[in-house]
Structure formats: structure tokens, C-alpha cells
Length: 131
Image: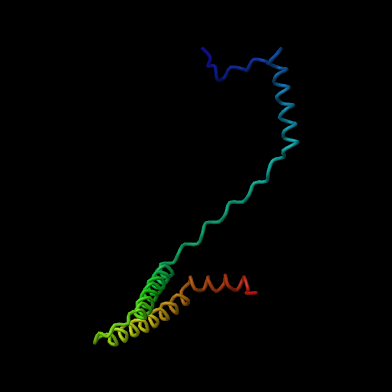
């Protein structure tokens, strides 16, 4: 017995033929009204992130956080007007911690700008000059 898949299709006659013709006419009108959009080329894959860039960025962020905390601690001592014997030692320690944090931040910033992420930042800044 022959398979249905290889049997020839029956010709379309009668009402089905007129419906198919109307459908094809509608599709032709829609294709004329809304032409096909050109295929957009796929975007290239992003470049892999360098572990050195990630490490430099993390170090810079941590140094910035430490600098912010040390500066906040130093400025918080402005409001303390006690006559305790260790007040000036406390102020001096806060100032020294702030200076150490500034030096660590400067070193981390230099390492960041020497990394590929810093080079990419400089290239982006060069594209958009300041007004």
C-alpha cells in the first residue's frame, strides 16, 4: 500500500481555490505595503575582559572606599570638642590614616590607568572632548 506522504496532492477546486486566491492577493498587498526589512548583521561578541583590568578596577574601588572612610573619620573629629588628654593623638592618627589612604589611592589610580581598562577609559575620553 502506498504511503500518504508520497501520494500526489489533490487539485484545489471550488470554494477552496477562491479562498486561496483571496489569501494570496491579501498577502501580496501586505508585502507591497510592508516590504521586508534587510537582515541586520549580528553584533560582534564583546572582547574578553582582562583579569588584570578587573584586579586594577577592584583595587581602585577598595582604595577609594578606604580613602572616603578615612576622610569621613577625620572630618567627624571636627565636631568633638572634648578636653580629653588623647584628643590630639586621635586627631593626628586620623590625619595620618587619611594621608596613607590618599597615597594608596594614588598608587591604585596609577595602576588602573596603566591597565587595559585605563587605556580604554583614555580612548573613550579622547572621543568626547570637553566643552
